[in-house]
Image (cartoon, rainbow, N blue to C red; front, side):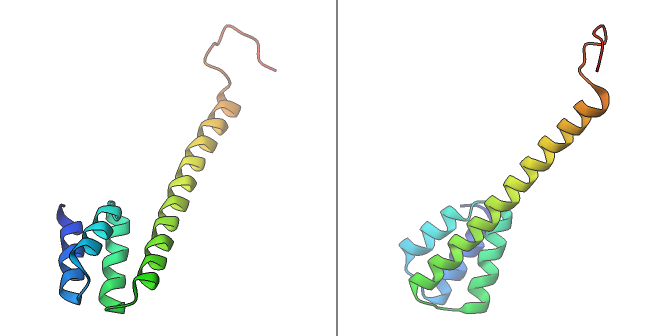
Length: 96
């Protein structure tokens, strides 16, 4: 574990979560975005039932996936717009 994951792990241990659970959560929250969100949740919520904790973890991961897909779609749209505006790279061909 590094950086933010260590912070999340040690915070969970201090709040009373089992070592194996804290290790699993820290391993899954492997981006800065997810780690920061989960750390904020643990600070705010304290010790909650594992089901509630897992629900929040899944929501954070779903948000991350949504943002990732949005960025992929934006990059693809940008390339498509460039293709529409500039045409294909082969300048010898006639364009419509």
